[in-house]
Figure 1 (tube, rainbow, N blue to C red):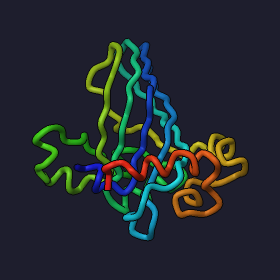
Figure 2 (tube, rainbow, N blue to C red):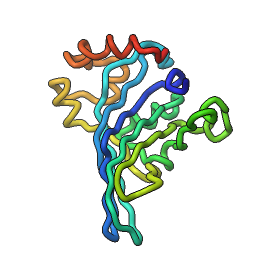
Figure 3 (tube, helix red, strand yellow):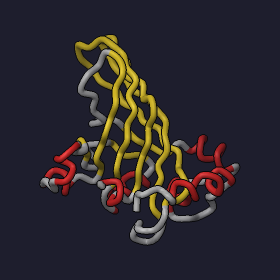
Figure 4 (cartoon, rainbow, N blue to C red):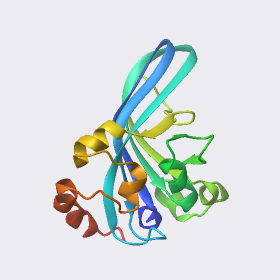
Length: 178
């Protein structure tokens, strides 16, 4: 039900996290927003993004984590459309509710600009995106669309909408998500 209320969705499959004293994480994915001035229309074209993070401390291990981020309000969308956003600092992030808790509109969920869900495989537990940087992947967007284009232009319906979008968006918009 929360996905029906989301203005945008970010999918980051297989984000790699590693550590041997110093740690880091890296992954790539896509941002897809609803069209229209208030993000209430059908799903739009994808903008490619990358996630990067680092940490210091006593740590050892590695894993791969799939992330789904639900962007719940215009503030979250605007944060993501800037050149880069530090999650937890530039945008309010909270772990998304699960099961029956998803129905309860708690204060933390109501204030969060971005709700996160994850599925991990590996030695790390309790994976968080707090402190990681999410930025548009300009090179991947150029490869996908065949010319230089920003995430803002893609989301706001500018010069985007290449072959990939004509093929995949009709099916995505037939899903039960709004």
